[in-house]
Amino acid sequence: MVQDGARPLPTIWQPTIEFVCNFGDGHEGLSTGVRASAQHSYQKEGTYTLSVEARVERGGTTSTVAAAERTITIKNRDPRFRGVGAVPSGDGRGGVLLSGVAWDAPDDELTYSWDFGDGEVSEGIDQWRVIHHFPLAGTYPVKLTVRDADGGIDTETLDVVVAGK
Image (cartoon, rainbow, N blue to C red; front, side, top):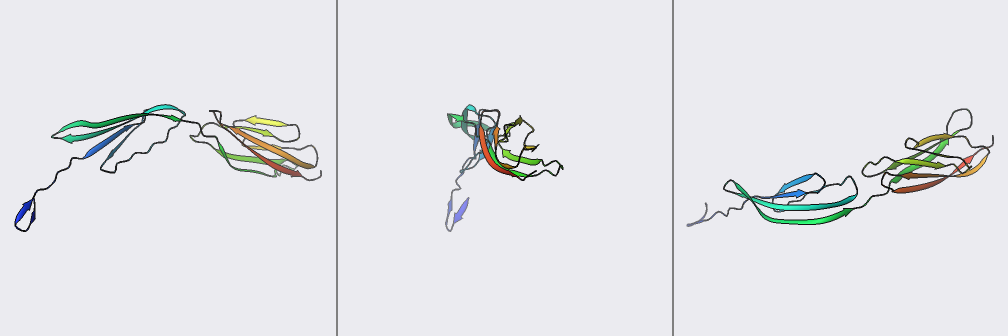
């Protein structure tokens, strides 16, 4: 008891509230307190049922005091380029080293497709960096397209200037 001068004041007991979140993808979150919160990142697109349950423990027994559910839809995010560049390859044959760095959440496998602007193309999962030999001097619009496993796409175009051979 807390005392205020002549008379005792009762202590107010508040049970701890526990919030349990089920994100619908096999992951759960637990938070306690008045301003409880939970964060989660979904790894795949799809429709999920998110449920939240508020529980209180009294006398060794836990009981649910409130519960809610909501259906949410997670859509694919397109991959994004962090940079595309071209430099002489240094291979002694006039090659150009082209590279494109892309990122995708949640780390989907990415396929890189190069259109070199001279009629030649190249595609593959490991093709984020390639060496290409252009046939003649000139300016070539090189286009790099990246695709993720869920159909997301991003494209960058870079003008590559090839000096006389």
